[in-house]
Image 1 (cartoon, rainbow over the protein chains, first blue to last red):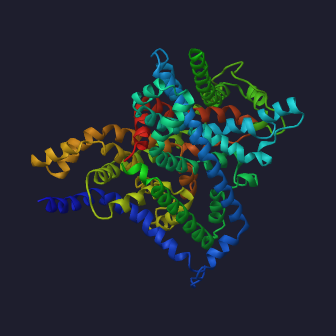
Image 2: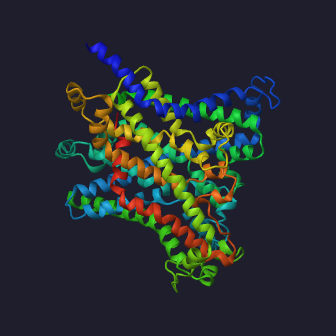
Image 3: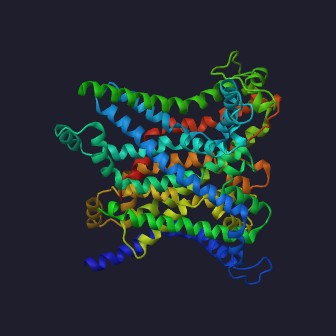
Length: 292
Length: 285
């Protein structure tokens, strides 16, 4: 009986997914397979083995862009994760008290989520006003230190990008953490308090271990959002920004515009492969936490 | 002593939240204030952006608020209206299509077992994570073959089959009690009936939050229209730039503010769904 049921389940489940899968196959999977095939051929259609890949890996622009993108992800995601956890913990602590403060804690959370709704096109002007030449930061630096900040013309440009990512995503990750925090049983904290554990000890020995299972999803969603920082970068700094904020996205756009398609095919395959392997590795390493 | 520590801790929490909220609000306040300035005031306050060699002067509010920028935008920039409707004509079909396709798919993933389900779901997560530029060239290839380039469908169709709504809605369907499903089946309900009468009503908040997140995402899309639409008359509002000459400054700021308005309204109306949707995506499977 059980067995027969599961075989019916099988086809029904697939029927529900079929339309989505068909679309994904037509618009993503099949063309990607085609790109994979083309990445092994020259522009003239001759089999080229791995020479396109070699050309990409030896390309200085690719190395610069891949390095910057990697640096960006490695810096931003831990910082964002920690910052939003601190904010979520602060909000959680305040709303755990007398409910007089609850309402404005909710308001603060909503305000922090607001950047999610702000199109890059709307805020780009304001970032220009702060960071570009003769902007607020330059004026202030000139007053205080005697020289302009020159954010967009130096290595600092990279950190402007980091800032705009944090500005945009802190509230999003904070909501994720809040969901995890409100799932931790109160009794754990009360018991610890009776045992004399201070605020930090409770955070270290109860909060963090209890939240560990969420880390995978938070990482995945933060990574997803980190690629969108390109919109702000593009609108504030244009197609050719300072080299410190030259990302893979800029490079892909240039190769696309210049019709350097063979390199583009190979680079797309490489990037997709790295992301896919990253997901598999993360899923594996956090499986213990997610499985139960 | 302990009381004092708690007081300090509490003050630190409040300070952190206020500081963060102020940082988020400041640029939006400046945008609103700037959009209420006259061309002359903009030229003075934002000289660095609009007239090149001048320095910016910090401000919080417009000194002589005026709606002239908005009037000029609404009465004197026909392309603005075209682009506003373009945004609607791209965003709403994408949302409708997404929900039509993603809701059943999410139900399939959440409630049924079938071979390679784990693998397929991992594939969806990976697809969801691919930056646009990675799939750009393959998208281009297929759109060219279907001769859809430079039509709205070039943005709409790939948008419909986004993996993100499947992921979000699935998380909501996963919390539908198994027993409800089994009971309906015992009573002789078919799979579509169960989906329609149990899945959809119970998963409605998930669908709503996918719709809100989808709207925010696609309303501010830049890469897809820029790549697949050559014809400027098809461009959405997120690509509106009336030029940064001094004479267009007030219009530019008003346009930025008006572009923000629809997502802001959707955000305020849907903020509960939004928070629920984000929270649900974080909870473990």
